[in-house]
Length: 166
Image (cartoon, rainbow, N blue to C red):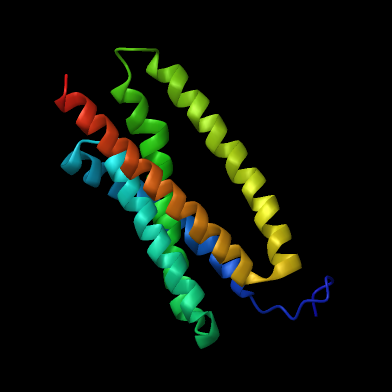
C-alpha cells in the first residue's frame, strides 16, 4: 500500500484533472471558428456562456442519476466552453480595440484578471463544495453563467442598436 494510505487506484478527481485540460484545447479551437463565423466577441461569449448554463443545469438535474460518465462528459463541455470564453476575452476582444488602445496591454490585463479570478473561484468553490456539496457549486456556476450570458447578449444588442443609429 502506498505511504499516503491510498489504495493505489486512480481517483475520479485525478482522472478529471488530467482529462479536462486536454479538452480545454478544443475550446480554444472552437472559439476561433465561431468568432470567425460570427465576427462579434460579445455574441460569441453569450453563446458559450449559454451552453455552459445548459450544461450546468443538466448536471444539476442529473446528479441523482449517479453516472460518472455522464457527469464527466458534461464537465468536459463546461471546460471547453470556459476555455473558449477565456480565449475570446483574452485574445480576440483586445484585437477589436487595437485602434482605441494598446491591444497587447489590454490582453495582458484581461489575462491577469482571468487568472486571478480562476484562482479565487477555485478556492471559493472548493470551500462551497466542502461546506454545502456539489449542488451548491453547480447552482453557483448556473447563476454566474446565466448572468454572464445575459450581460454578453445585452451588450451585443445594445452595441448593435447603437451602431445602427450612428
